[in-house]
View 1: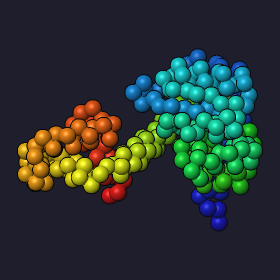
View 2 (view 1 turned 30 degrees about the horizontal axis):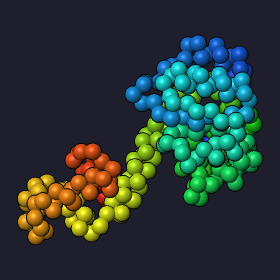
View 3 (view 1 turned 90 degrees about the horizontal axis):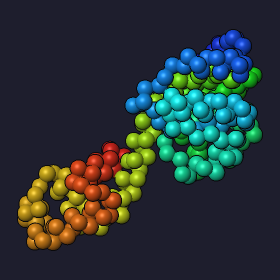
Length: 239
């Protein structure tokens, strides 16, 4: 009995032959444009320079913040500075670049929603890719409409990753607060005024104003709304 990974792998192997680069260019002329409001960073790893340039231009024209890489080592070196987004990478990089891709806190690139492309695919390759978190497997060179469809399906995962990273950053900022600053923050979260916070904590309103000013600096926010957003984001990580 084939499990779900093997079944999906066999379906992929039996799919039609890949489009050639000339066909890709023809399809790009009638591309399906991605909604600008849903565009997010796309990290394209492609060893074939001409194909990398074509796809990078077309994805950028579709509204995505596209950043191309020649191979997995280049991507791995940039990981610490990359914003949440989606990775498009050849499955061959699993064998040639797996160690470097696993860097960055033990998860590396595989914490990003990943679309993997392939020339030839075995069931074992497909299972490995899916277990590493691939959101789609496409024959290369994939036609632009296929990529845009896959990127659309990856969008919810990118949003979740963005929220999780924001929550982690917020939690780190909140953890840096002093106990008194946290007390003031909790009172702010309850909607209390400076006078009410002062009464609850047994401090003067002027002291509360000073604590609030420090809170803004420590949490790197410029408004009450931003302060509350950071506090709630940090709380969501712990709930």
